[in-house]
Length: 362
Ligand SMILES: [Zn+2]
Ligand SMILES: [Zn+2]
Image (cartoon, rainbow, N blue to C red; front, top):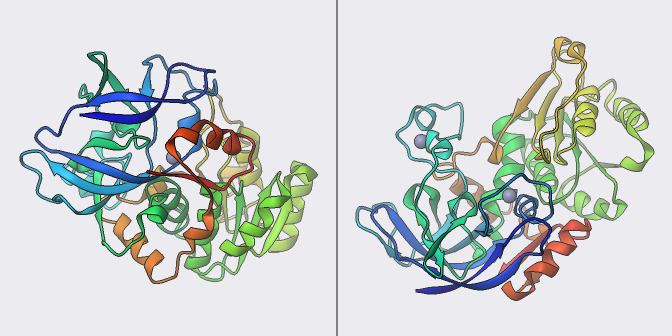
């Protein structure tokens, strides 16, 4: 079958839309008709010059929601008509990581697959995260397909598979934010706003947002932010202001930008003894971070998490429940809706920091 999909042809060339051939589902695979897909900075890294990558072209998109159209042999967890969220990290359910309570990083995530359902002129084409959600239809492995309740709006839960899981999960599943605590969120984009939501749901009493764009303040406050700091004041002023607001240092800090100097600020602004820092933002290229060893030795904990340490198939549906019972306010997160043909303009909005989440409606 044929499908329209958005892809990167190489670095520093805008994302484009073209027709691709899509092979139907083989054993253990699912054909999904996409209904909506969210634009994420990590898609952008394949065409804005910030990622070392050579396997072009690549169909992009790793966040979205859709309806199962067909299943290959052996698929048991979903059937045609089911509503699903394709997820970048598989949950095979069998590997040591899946069996542990400690991580969502299924061993299969790190095992390359040669399978390429997309092709063009007979040449198999790679898809980001083995998904490529910027396509009318996709074929995904069952272990990368999360079944969700049918009353959840697909045009909102489409942001759950990356931004929602990463943000909310980083606060609740990774940092385990405690009621009455204080938290700082660096970067109020699609991820950061969901971290704010996660902190609010966890019962944090003070949630400080830091961003270079003062227009992000309103969205931050809707998500539950109590204080806003303009990052233009500089690192020392920001750290000082956070220490003043929290009486010596925040209990938690979340770096959602992907910049070594901001990660350092996130460490320095937390409290001695138990400050917990979660590194979320993707660092472009091969950057290294410079931290004072003492700031960790003083009892702080620096954590990393992909997708907020949310197990993608068994735990993600719980976040959908939180959306449906009103605890999560994710719909305010979506600032722009576009058609697939406008996707280059959508990414331009994201690049300029003018959008929270941009969603493609199919
Ligand atoms: Zn993403
Ligand atoms: Zn696994």
